[in-house]
Amino acid sequence: MIVVKKQKLSLSEKLYVFEVAKGMWVTIGHFMRNLINPSGLPTINYPEEKRILAKNYRGLHRLLKKETGELKCTACKLCANACPARCITVEMALTEEGKPKKTPSRYDIDISRCIFCGYCVEACPFEAIDMSSGIYELANGDCKNYLYTKEKLSSY
Amino acid sequence: MTNFFTHLDWLFLGTTIGKAVFAWGLTLGFILVNIFLERKICAFIQDRVGPNRANVLGIRLFGFVLNFADAVKLLFKEDITPPFVNKFYYFIAPLIIMTVALMGMAVVPFADDLVIGNIVIPMSVLDINVGFLFILAITSLSVYSLVLGGFGSNSKYPLFAAMRSSAQMISYEIVMGLSLVGLVMVFGTVHLREMTAMQGGLLFGFLPKWGVVMQPVGCILFCIASLAELNRTPFDLPEGESEIIGFHVEYSSMKFALFFMAEYANIFVAAAVITTLFFGGWQIPWLPTETIKENAAIVLQITAAFAFSGVSIVAFLLHRFYSKRKYKWKDLREKEGMLLYAVLACIALISIGAIVFAQYVPFNSILKSSLAAVLQIGIFILKSFLICFTVVWIRWTLPRLRYDQLMALGWKIMLPVGIANILVTGLILILVPGK
Image (cartoon, rainbow over all chains, first blue to last red; front, top):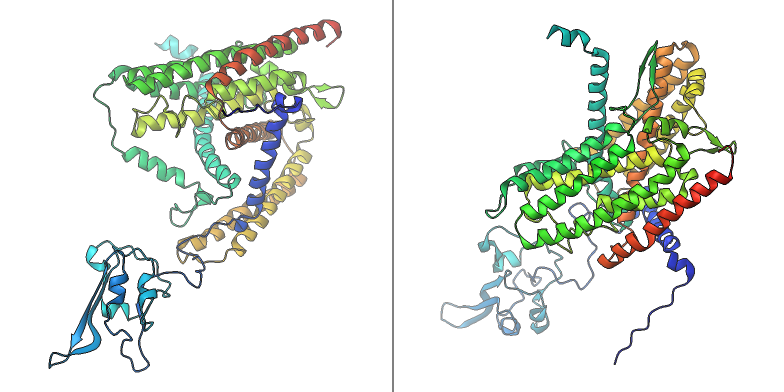
């Protein structure tokens, strides 16, 4: 059985007036401090000011390129298999003879389904995809704009 | 008909209308000020920024402009009248509370009698001898608004809230009346003008004879009871904006806004009444009206000096605020600082001008009495403002009382203390002669 012990109050606490005065002192302290120095507030004024992101912040994906300018991606589809939200669609490009070309003809990420878990980055054996772009303002009025294609993902 | 017009006291009519407009303007203006104070004080106490986005051509006035955005929003919202309400009661409830809130200021004097030649103008809208009894009577009418609002809504929860709040308001009205009995015993009058005039005297030669000095217990009781009457935290059970459902759930749009505005108007009226009864009303401590009139030049210079130093402090704070900002807005808001600096510079120039003016221009009697009136109105508004500030400050400090605690406080603590206060005051008045 749980027994709640009632806290014994001292006389000044019972009178309530002094405790109220103490509380008022704390709040007026905060008020005066912020009135005199409003720039000391911890608030980030968002559209004008932006948060400094952590090094490993997971933002929008980016397809990396080799020095030659081709994508590092070999279209092995490990990222698509690792993705728990199933938002990555990869198709391998074919040569004219119909042999695989080890480069994607299509690499789409449906950002509206992405949960930004970073498993695709971990799964990639060639470090062809990462999430270090630092882009997080992804809201859009049109659903079609949430489909990020190969060209879009490698453009920044 | 001619008889009526020839016998009409045009001076009385004109001054009364003027004073009524002033008192109403003050009350309605303080609605905006109180809402602004509520938002900004709350924000700063909780280490937030508060409203700072709404602007008209880049002018934000630290969030004051948000009030106008609010007004526009409330005016253009759909005005829903639920099908199940009793239309008459439903419509009349917000009207009652707003009317009552605006009537409260009628008897409060906001300056000493204005003497121009041999004309004496009492500076309260109604100079009637029932004084604060009028205020008590009027404020107790606001219970009708809560009950009709809750009952007329014809819905369970507003009815519960109305029951709760009417019980609260009726209990605390008793304490409110009792706490003022001591004051009447000390001052021997209920006429607010005479009461305020008496508070200009000195106790033991140095303390201003304010109600709070003469009746400290009565003052505390009255302030607590007023908070309960205003439905403000820690007694905001009737409204309980987010936690318990208030009596105005079924209201929307402008009808809700009337309840909301009446609350803030009532804060100002209560502040004005507390100022008048306990904090000397328009009395400037150690500076009676005669002294102001005799040394008009020096008083004006000192006031101007105060204004100048106040402006400098505000300008310093503004400069700090603008120079420490780490980001740019890139729109008209950048120019707001210049406007504020210009206004401050104007006030500074006017105050310097007043100092020079007082040095070289002789004062005639009209100028002297109007100076006294302006100063007294200013100090009255300042005192009321500080009390409004305290009411808001209390709201963001103290948690709400439980219903049984509320009733226990009202009936078991405040009522006996109020009666004891009357007894002790009576004993002192009998035992200490010549007081």
